[in-house]
Image (cartoon, rainbow, N blue to C red):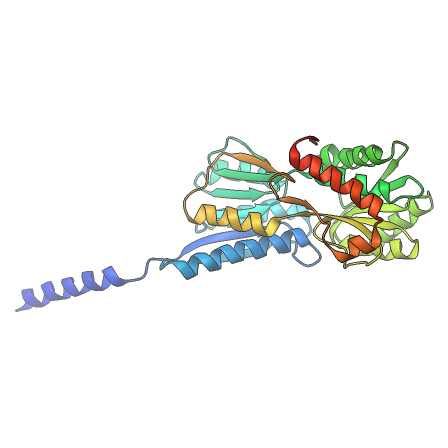
Length: 329
């Protein structure tokens, strides 16, 4: 009798186990900054969350997403990223920033099974890392070209949060190349805030370049751009905007916007991982031709702010890039 009960109990346990829901998978999103005042990270988060929501709606096995906003102190990012890997429960850590591969590589020496999917960065050949970078050379060139077309003094400025390889080697030189392609006598001032949040310093730097005759600025400085904006309005300086559609931020002052399709790409990369299709070790670059970098030309504020002649010149440049007639690296 006891033996029969044990057999029945075992069969019942096995039967119930067959119908138990699979254990939820866990992934992490590491935001090297904060989403507020940072369109790039807000879009990153939105894309990953959308992918996870759709995956969970379609299947029985659920995915739990943990989001860490690491803050603006870059010196702390390495320890925070290490803590995520050390937890040992996240299949993959998704992030977006050119500096993340340099932080991930030493982590992988200790946590060899950890996987990383990183946007806006390049790291080829590592079997635990998948990267896709945006062609920021195209973004910067288009911004410089648009800025020079809308400058009366032929003096432009780029105000950056910090100096880093992509800024120094890609964005700044191509912003200047684009400006000179539109008007050969154009010059570019370069100023650095020192962090991603000091709006007061952003305003001070804008005042300083205004005194030198600058009348178009490209701000790439996170929260500090609020100071750039306020000072630009006071000094009647035009703005070229980077990474999202910025025309509504300062109507009549913003003369161009180049966007990264970060929501789309982060969603695609997350879905690629969840479906087991990630090509580990691969590093791709996407830009205007692929549709992940876009020059915003359909906003009514763009039409009302920029002359038809300049819009036509910009359209030709964008069309040439799409057709492969102009290559920007």
